[in-house]
Length: 170
Image (tube, rainbow, N blue to C red; front, side, top):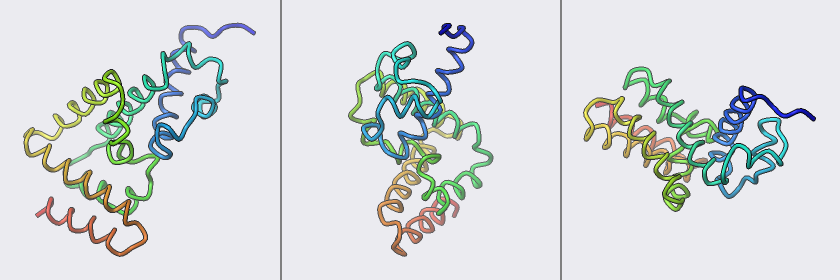
């Protein structure tokens, strides 16, 4: 079987990163094996190490991709806050906030994984203007989303989202 061109290899690598971004958020980094990551991109398990040094490297790239993608779709601040603190976002873990889905796992990851995340997150924060206010707002949003996911199914879940939205949009 002929080998892929460099262009195909770059395309396949990006497909794996995008698929991993969703799978990791949905099931956690440890909840997905290399075969599943490659299969989600329509590729075979054997090619993984041609694209990535390790699953941890892919986790950092996938987290950075998720943040970058979210930053590209921000819109205005009010719309972002309303969308982020919505039941729809709470319920769509695979396409939602990577910090709320993978924060504890990323915190325990190797330094290169955390560095990839920090670089992308710093750029994300910078899109909000005032650095200190952005950090406070984003921290409030992430905390509210995590609590609302933990309490999903109980009225408290929607109350947490509404309270955070109210506080941030007041």
